[in-house]
Each structure stands twice: as structure tokens, then as C-alpha cells.
Image (cartoon, rainbow, N blue to C red; front, top):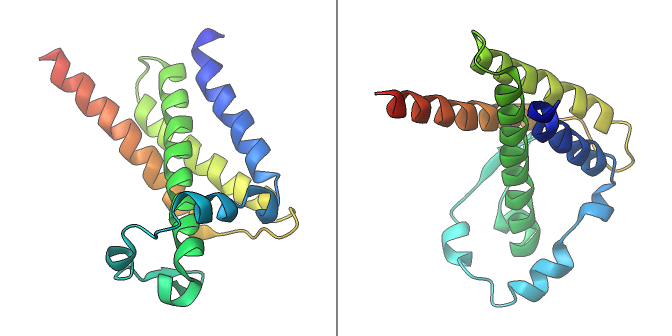
Length: 152
């Protein structure tokens, strides 16, 4: 049971956060206080990210909503990377553990996006599933590579 603990904790955090409305999750007031001098605004102004048939940029949304968007997507990447690691380590040294962890995480991401579509103010996004799966691939891939390097 211990080996499943990380995975279960990550799932509880995921379920809790994806059950919240956008307004409940918004960190705009904190960003406005913390980043009042708008650091890296010039560098971030160059970024134009296609998302849900629109372009997300500072020009389109403004500095603080754009930074919040980046943080939210980074949270997807890291959160699902941790879910994948939880699955990977829980699966143990069995054959195909990395593949099972990545595919399992992609499946969880799809289920979460579907479930999230029933939360007021939230939508289902295939692009978020791709970000989630990319996090799983990078996190599990890094551990697999590090393990192989230390075996030699």
C-alpha cells in the first residue's frame, strides 16, 4: 500500500482542484500584488500560444491573466508528471512500467477533463490532455534515463 501513496495523494489533489470553479482557483489578485512591476513583460510579450482556437498572449489577455495561464499549464504539466511517477513507482520493476504509467496518466487526464466539464465555468480541453501527457512522458522518461545511467 505504501508504494501507492504518492499516486493516491496526487489523485486527491487533482480531484479537489479540478472540482473547483475558475474563480475559486484564480490567483490574479496574488499575482497583481506579487508581480506589480511586471517582471519579464517584454520577454513574455513575444509568446503567442494557440489554445482552444484562440491565441493566448499578453496582447490578447493582459500581463497578469497571461502569467496565470502559464502557471496553470505548468501546474498541469508538473501535476500529471507527479501522477505518472506515482504510477510508475507503484507499478514497481515490472515490465512496461514506464509505458503503463504514461498511458494510465493520459487516461486519467482524459477522465479528469471530462469530469471537469461538469464544473461551472470550466471546460474540457484536449490540449490540456496533451500538456498532461507531455508531463507524464518527461517525468517518467527522466527517471528511466537516470536509472539507466546509474546502473552502468
